[in-house]
Image (cartoon, one colour):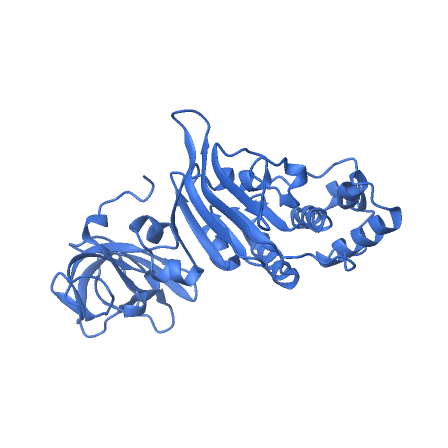
Amino acid sequence: MTSSPIRAAPVRLEDVTKLFSKEVVAVDQVDLTVEPGTLVTLLGPSGCGKTTTLRMIAGLERATSGRIFIDDEEVTRLPANLRDVTMVFQSYALFPHMNVFENVAYGLQVARQPKEAIRSQTLEALAMVGLEGLENRATNALSGGQQQRVALARALVMQPKVLLFDEPLSNLDAKLRKRVREDIRDLQKRLGITSVYVTHDQEEALAISDEIVVMNLGRIVQRGTPHELYSRPATRFVADFIGSASFLAGHYDGKAVTIGGFSFPHQQETPAGEVTVMIRPEAIRLSTDRAGLETTVRSSSYLGAVTDFVFSSPHGDIAATIPGEGLTPLLRDDTAYLTFRSAGIHLLPANDRHKNPDS
């Protein structure tokens, strides 16, 4: 692999639509550019079109209309085996009758590479994913995380222009998911390979991505860096899908937000008037001097370093994550006064208040 390093390539979709029938529009006029060497995650609920979009890039689904480019070459009608991309699947798709080395080497053997090149490139790919010394191990004797690494090595050994991930961590437990996603991100950055990653897990998307593309009903709703989408969501759907948030009716005068009779400073480039106030859980503080928004404790969950609360108010429920150190115990139905940090507040249009985020 070192003799022919992976070269980052751009990916571009122009007005791409995929119809499964006249009634079923899986992807609806999507325009998307993935810059060379970046990892872009397609994020959204089931049925939003993210996996279909990935499969069209791979050549496993054919676009009904529009054009797809990889490395500035149009590949819209090109078969999957000629696109110079590889995919890491949710199911790993390993051959059970082959050992680790044979699984990783399979694509090179099909391509009729010289035996010595197959051996050196396969061992290098295994070293990249931390599986040195396991080349003779049966795949069914590996842990789930190790099997996923074999699948990743098998994709990397082909030196693709673009690496595609289809929910690659779904079959792993929570602790292992975190470790493997860190490994994938570290490897992607070291190699500088263009990657498109599909998941429905917002935490995974926030942790691994250069950019996140949020999709719903076959369309792109918003795209941006993880920080941009978390702190400045364009809609309630995005705010609710990227992390946890509460939504209250409020009024904005250009300098402060008022909820009920409580006002706090906040500045945002948005018209003054009625607004929907998005509040992240970590933006909430408990007031010790009864100054703030009056609420009632609905529930609490002690988590060690923090306590998760749900507070009831006449303006709606408010979810909060409060640091545990020095926290005065609060019981169900206790009165609590809340203040808000502007950094965790974002104002949305008032008419976005009642929309169902899963609609």
